[in-house]
Image (tube, rainbow, N blue to C red):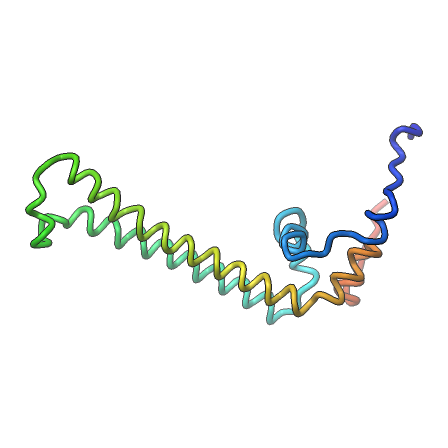
Length: 147
């Protein structure tokens, strides 16, 4: 290894790393699979149930929007719309407004879930960020060295 490749992090990065909610979310869910190591079984089950329910909500909203778009001729006030542009904008509104609402509610649910997990695991997460040792998140983790 060359001298230029040896990165010595400065004092701030080593001794005062970022430990805010956004960094927690990135560390646990986006960059790594730390959520599988850090959380206990009940938190993992809660997270999986949340994601599964969110998928069901999105699929249900999509089916509802498509059903209304297909069956709009049977709705009394809607079947009177005759101009093509009005029909187009009405169909686009029926499709995108519920999808946007469900997506927004899903994002709020995700943020609430991550904030609750952040509060529960913050002391271990703080030690992990300062030391860089995965065992700080969960002492029961076994690390195997493959050589």
